[in-house]
Image (tube, rainbow, N blue to C red):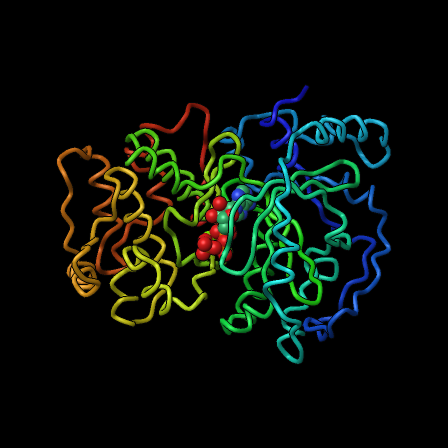
Length: 413
Ligand code: ATP
Ligand code: MG
């Protein structure tokens, strides 16, 4: 029987997308569609489900992600014409236990959420089957077997699910209650961020395969991060070794370099927003979701402001270099167990420490790691070490597994 790891690699190699070939393409003026006026997908479900991912956009970093035959899907997995092999593949997918469903969606259905009308309803009529850039087949909740709960998000629950149709993909299905999004006044931002995330393809960025909605909810079909939250690991261990920290920061720098080349700024890097794949690889999730009213977050979420750079604290203009600052904070927190400017006595003190760059690097941190942290935590954003240099930094090179070659997307963009 195939291992969970190998199945996950297969899933990673697959693209649950229509590629736009046979699908009706929404005209640009219809980017906001009236509620429930889906254009019928003309695409054969089975064909779509055996459509594979575009070639690796990072050919030089292939080795970072074990050169599995599954990463060359035309050899290892069935093409559209080889339907029987597809069924064999589906069997292995079906053999993975997705756990027991707790009935949470029905409980929520009774207790929370109202139907949303008007402009907000149009903003939230999100459906990847009619997305202009990456159309998928049309999806509905009834297309999934629902398994164990994975967690609770701000706007709804997240479940491990499997598609009922072959090959039976394993995914994380995240629900978002439309009325709660409207209450939070974030409908436009959520719409934009979902559309951005669907177009991102990087091994360390959580994939969004598709999305659909009903009258009350939006459903996001996310890549399943088999090892869960990185934050839990950090809490369990207190801090990480230099080797483990360096490897995470290497993956983060590679992913950020990709995002920045696509003009996407994360703005909310912190351990809580990082997940781990089945092989322990880091996956950035929730990016760009800092649009969730940072003002409120500061008050309600302990620790969040620890990652804010001086320019944001001082309400100055900011750019992608905010992510470099946060990478420095993250490096420190991995190695020490808490962020560098934390001051539990008062929020004001933390602000002050950030604005002064009051950085104390404990002797337990190696010289190389200190050097990188100090280069990232520069008050002047222009002076922060660029990601292409982070990827070449001695502390990163020292622990990078043999055979992994990184090519900074930033440098080549
Ligand atoms: P919060 O503000 O609490 O982080 P959120 O709306 O950002 O909420 P998520 O963090 O995306 O919601 O999801 C809530 C929890 O569900 C996560 O902390 C994680 O444990 C789990 N989860 C979310 N997505 C996945 C995934 N793709 N794979 C595995 N687990 C996931
Ligand atoms: Mg989250």
